[in-house]
Length: 242
Image 1 (cartoon, rainbow, N blue to C red):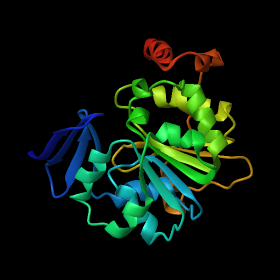
Image 2: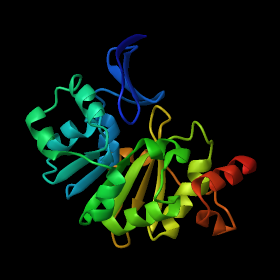
Image 3: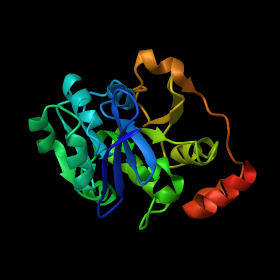
């Protein structure tokens, strides 16, 4: 494996490694994406052509997908400017456009203050590691905020590599609990897990060619008081249940 970048930002350690034809972004030791990887955001975007807000996404993977999909109203909010700077070296993607649409800010603060949009894509390190969702939000409060700010859909990547079925036991039922009427788990060809949540009255935004990846998750807990606990407390219960 060839290390192309190894830098420490104010927020995290940033590595870009090349083990195949395309470089891969690794943050704090956690692999994020290949650069570029359009299929990742094609799945998360689905059929949405309205307003789109990406929380995280500093690898700029979504830029080309939004442009080629003719999504006119999109924003990416990334807290770490150095991630954007590093990834821009490896993504030759309509650079004039991404500079106008990439906002350097705390995604959770931005989400709290922004106007509602049609579709929110969650591409935060905090959502790939369930123990990384930081204060001031609890897990339930964050999902409630997503429900309030997304008028149609919320989608995102979730890693079950560290916590097994915690994604299904905790997150997917919790999305329904805060008001999303249809929640689905998708698994792509690489075994990566994604979620889609849809508001009442909206058809699924999942593209037809992705629907064969949908898994209707049956796992759940009879005692929903778990969702009132902190993320760490939830994980203790989930790990003991596995």
